[in-house]
Structure formats: structure tokens, C-alpha cells
Image (cartoon, rainbow, N blue to C red; front, side):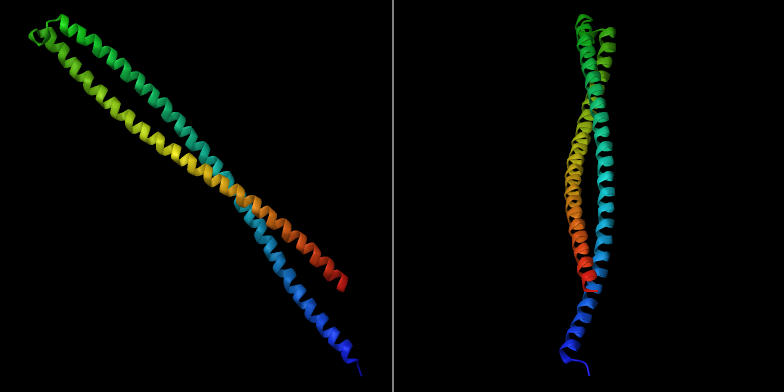
Length: 172
């Protein structure tokens, strides 16, 4: 007949081994999840970088367009000033030449107003794009933070797994 103490120790050992096996399986699953999360985070980081680059390119393009439109507006104003001088020299609206110049001035004034409105819209678009870049950079920082935390978690899981393997191997 077997010694009851040995039977009890043997039963406890089997229970411990079963728990270690279950923990080992959970550890493997956690490690796989952590590695997948790390890959997902890396992909999100890369996508954020691409989106930031696209938005910065758009801002650069908007800046270039705004500068061009402001130059055109300045040129229009110079031309308007020249036409105003010619209008005064022609004697104002009383002459045929003055009436022709007045029509040109009115047309140029309309063009200046349109350009000014276009510039305002472009500046609103630029501000929106700049806000998007700030949001994307914030998102990128969060992804970096998650990546660091995921890396730490993966390291902890790996260390715990090695310890469990050592303990499990020592018990068998």
C-alpha cells in the first residue's frame, strides 16, 4: 500500500503541472497576441508617417498657390493704380476713353475681389491641413507610446515564459 503523504504530494504535483501547462498555453497565446499587436502598431505608425507626409505636401502646395495668388493680386492692384491714373488723365467718365478705362477698372476690381476671396479659402484649407498634421503627429506619438509599451509587455511575457519553462523542466 502506498504512503498517503506520497500520494498527496503526487496529486499536488499533478495539479501544479496541469496549472503550469495551462499557464504556459496562456503565455504562448499572450506572446503571439503581443507580437501581432507590435506588428499592427508598426503598421499604424508607418501609415501615420505617410499621412503626415501627404498632408505636409498639401500644405506646401497650398502655400505656393497662396503666394502666387497674392502676387497676382498685387499685380492687379498695380495695374488698377495705372488705370486710375490713365482714367484721370482721360478726363474721367466724360470721355469715351475714360468710359473704356472705367470698364477695365471695374473688371479689374472684380478680379481683385475674386482673388482675395480665393486666397481666404486657400488659407482656410491650409489651416485645416495644418490642424490635420497636428492631429496626425499626436496620433503618431500615441502609436510610438503603444509600441514602447507593447515591446515592454512582450519582453515581460518572454521572461515569464523562460522562467516557467525552467520551473517546469526542473519539476519533471
